[in-house]
Image 1 (cartoon, helix red, strand yellow):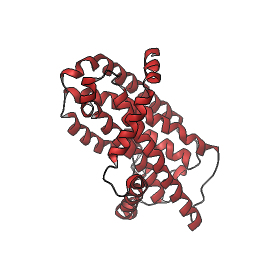
Image 2: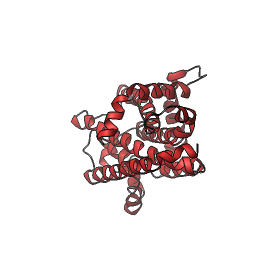
Image 3: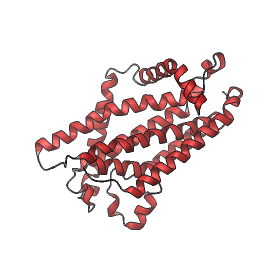
Length: 270
């Protein structure tokens, strides 16, 4: 672990250069550029509200979501899922996309997947401006009384949890993708399953207790749920918080272990 910290300090400049490169490549040849980070989630929120609003947008029986406008509920979940999806996809392809640099210059290889997660996390933080703007809109419009208290500040904790989970999954995927190219296609299918099991555009309490217990197996569901609960001014689900952090620590440990065990063989397959 000490060696990881030393390498991170030594190659910090390269890490940030890779982060900037990832962001620039994402918006290359785009007229809107970084502005698309604000427009895209807003448009997605509008589409999901139109499509599912009447069918799934009825008031929740959960006290934490009572009175929360459906567009805010959808957007708060969609933003977190979008980060997880884009961060893991970026990390998964990072070793292969930087194969030419890996073959020529030695740097700690974990910098490549980690830089992908950091770049997408910065983009995600910018996109949170949209969530704040939508909340202000509904407050001004009326009909939504947001409880402003200390619990809202605690919403940072699920975001840190999400960031570390993204690094852990990204390290695992980047390792697997070097040896199994089909992992890209399998992960796209798994991401779809994760999305539907994260309660992004429906209230989980309407599914029944047995269905909710199944959803809680998905750590992303727990992270999104606790972010929403705290952001809407209510205390965390403590059990769910412990579970998501436990899964994150295990996944992060497995990701580091697998990556370090196999990184010397990357050069033979990229």
